[in-house]
Length: 276
Length: 234
Ligand SMILES: Nc1ncnc2c1ncn2[C@@H]1O[C@H](COP(=O)(O)OP(=O)(O)OP(=O)(O)O)[C@@H](O)[C@H]1O
Ligand SMILES: [Mg+2]
Image (cartoon, each protein chain N blue to C red):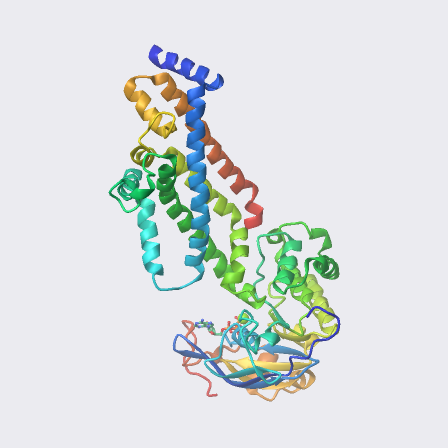
């Protein structure tokens, strides 16, 4: 799959009535959405809204309790499912960068190398790819360091480099710049931009509204496990329709969204929930 | 007191003069314990990893019996192996009792639970941390296992060294299943016990010194590994 000759597209990604329950609580509620090719989607929403769960469901790391996830019409499979499974082909063309970077206890180079190995890229071709992505992400001078001594910002770049090396058709990013300083944030945004420009579909979450404005072609606003608003970015930021989305964009605290069915109820929060 | 200094001098002479019987005993000890630890690692590492990564029927039983075995005194393990290998026992036909092989078997039983239990802990913790990333890259537990063992390598080496420490220092099991036969199954710990009872303190002390150096060496190695590799684990 790492050939420049494009594999058949795995898009569109369709979610149909997707629900996810855990511990008796419905955390994702009846989400239907269709991700078309060639754009960047930014998912925003308050803490605990279900953004990370939403990305995991799309990527196949968790299975919906109800509803279906389809890639190009084929029922999705978990990325670690056997290649014999019909949905597995789509999983091999996706990658994900997690909210907290996960670094193997090896060198920077070996971290990228391992990912390529898992994708069955022959050894001879790996070195060149590693060289390229480390160069593009500015990590070349750190190549021989243990990955876990890198700063969080550098680790996040390495996570991007590792994902990039796989040349995914779709890249999921869960708050890729959380806890990064402005210059590191800028660096990461440039890398994501470069990955996108090489034809990778970006689906990311962020809490940084400025970043959402800079990076989004399309915005999904999620609150309490539901998509409350979805719109082209320009339209969303200029005239959000949903009142919660309006408040969110204006930077008002969404404290009143912590309603009756919220398990993570904070002491002192008003208990009356906003009707949905 | 002079007894002690005399014995110390004689012991030093034996050690530095590479006394033949002493060398023979040391070599047999190392052979038995190193073989036992190698086999225990071959069994214990994958067993620990399996217990960490899979939920299956009988897992609970395995974990409990592993922990029980870990706390067993060597003499009891020796007794069990003795019963199994004795003429009347189920494996009596192999005629292994009072051979180095019997001692290796007993020590494997002593060391495997330690290595397996520590491995399970290490791999379980690593998997909690790595799971989503690994699965995202296409590796479920079975494909990730070699990487997990490799990334846990420094802690696992310490576990193996701990196993070697237990094997080389125990006397109960090898005494019972080996019988402490001169030139055949006499190892450091059993001959220390014997020489002391015979009043031959020089040889006992010489062996004691070697055991001490060995265990200090193991602990030193474990310390250096932990220390030098902290940054990989950070
Ligand atoms: N396995 C689980 N069992 C029970 N509850 C869960 C589980 N996973 C997530 N949750 C809950 O689901 C809700 C949504 O979680 P999620 O991580 O998707 O939020 P998020 O929108 O990504 O928030 P943040 O912005 O803080 O990252 C949270 O309230 C969380 O506590
Ligand atoms: Mg999240």
